Length: 138
Image (tube, rainbow, N blue to C red; front, side):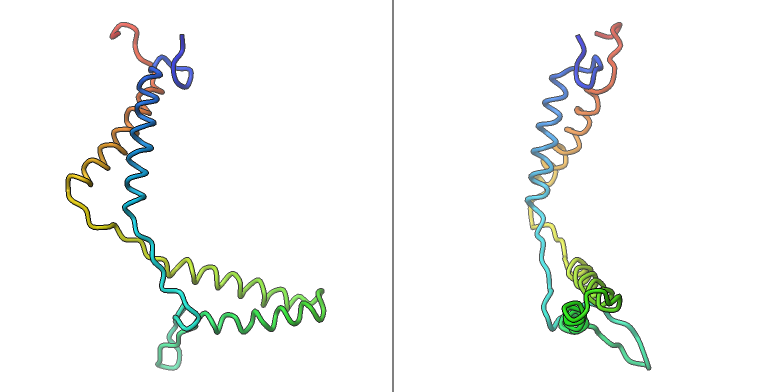
């Protein structure tokens, strides 16, 4: 009888490893806090020009978007209108994604060790179940 993945590795190791992996990664992802500083007045992009630092805000990105939408409704075959609209939406999406910050919540070293043992140990058992076991060793 074949086990997990068609190998003789064992279905028990497969399910225990899968359960440990799921539990460990759930606890790890649950401990991560995601925040964003995005707002219409917040700086999305910045560059140096003429000896000063110039920042582009979320509201500034919406100005070409508004012109692009107006031009699309006036003449939908206008290439410039589509470039303005798609470029503004793309810049806005990348700006929002670039302002996302991840941080790990405060936890004891025991909590972190349990999370890592579950996640990495689960990966080890899961991969071990997919490996062929030599019949001489069993």
